[in-house]
Image (cartoon, rainbow, N blue to C red):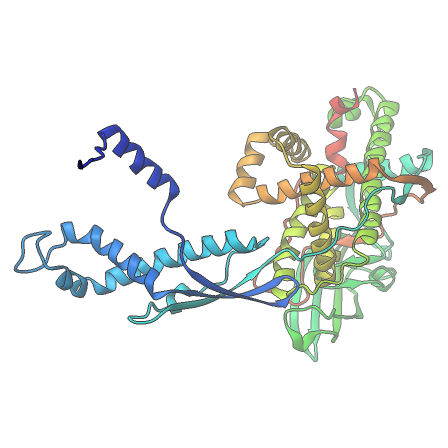
Length: 503
């Protein structure tokens, strides 16, 4: 006795099977992948897609196209398959190429677990889908280097400390009040701390590289520019009078975009147009109330003391970061591609400027840091990138990440220093694509706090910081654009206008 048994599939079961098939996604590609490592952070990948996979994607694309394809002489959807394939060959080929590239890249990324730090460098326009045979394409990608994480616990660190006395407060008070001082033209010779109006011309072999006209600066021993620092600027100008010209030289750095000018000597012609000295205001009750609601001079001096303490904390944080970085990157001898260093240079500068701005440092201090960074951009970026990779690994291992409240706190600090609303600061940062930079700042700060919590400290007395440099946002050798995201708010005067912070 025999019987035919037919398994009937109910509509609900059919729907469940279709849903399961959709969730599983398309069949995986049969890929042949070759990965070369030309550098620690570079991978060159060659991918070959089999002819069978190409034909499968072509058939799938034709299957979607045929029901609506319009071919002369046939009703829509009634034309022979071969005719549709011939008529829409280029359209089908482009769609199949795009789908294969997208699916291949995703599968390669999953199977090889690249710790990518950039998008694949793939020129899609130059890739051709062959009519016969396999499909091969190549791309380059930058990845995080593979390394053994150095021991970061129980580090021995030095914490800089200082007790601020009356002399420190007097010096800072004088500097803070300078914005309220009246400038008076003087006929006597130039002295340090005078305000000067200058024309400066930078020449190489008699050719003008750049110039500054009517620039107003406070004279200090050094002058910092984006691509150079003039160590003897103060001594060259001191003693001059209005109408006089002084000359000096500087040597350009070895990291200029213009290779022909690297290490070359440049002549400076400095014309002193006007000399002014400052007459400081009296600390009357009305003036003290006007600049920040201070009740008396003692209240103002207390505010200055708190500002000095905040700056000391910033110096401590910077010092500990530098010590931690020196220890953890000592064995990090990875080869870093020049393009990666160039991009990282801009990112690291943004991060550092953001941190300085959040800490309330004045514009000139921030500009001086930015100039120093750019004068040594390759080495600064190399150190920062190695530091970033190590901090990133520690953050991953320890589950450290930036939270919404972290973002809010940082943006609030920046808003306070720039005298803007947090909402406006956030909108500007989002528009400029700086939220990733802010995320890195938060995560790296948390990593440093974790390392410090496990470290052993010894205290080292330090000297008071002396402002001996005037910083200007100018390049001796102009480039197409500046990557210096310098703050235009904050500083000593800002601190004087925040009496509520002292409560």
